[in-house]
Length: 129
Image 1: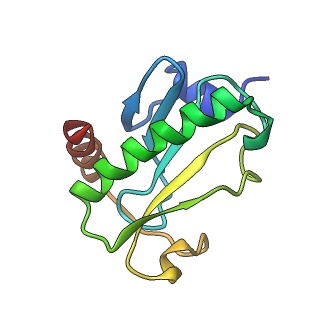
Image 2: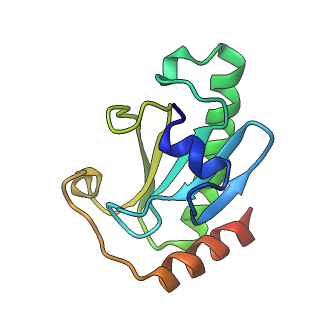
Image 3: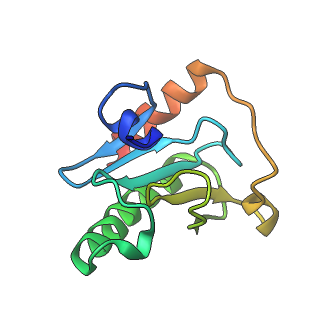
């Protein structure tokens, strides 16, 4: 059965898309730690990040770097933190989280946003890529 991320990539579930290329897809987390929290995933459904082959892993990291730079240009933060947890969805993914302190990486802390805010933010990040 397809993961929720595969369903997002295939357009079966709507998302606030930030970036896309032939191999990777980035979209805003709808339950963000902070404003701008973005998920970068390979389009190929692979459960664990380290199950990607070396080229796929490198492509995802390079893609994530570009997205992180765009996020930092749009969202006021000290830096963009990166986390790989991999327990929530069986599809490799990287969390890019704009942070001011280590507490912003706490996944039990969430920020509420309106659909219009998500759409505006996704468009602003896209514009920086």
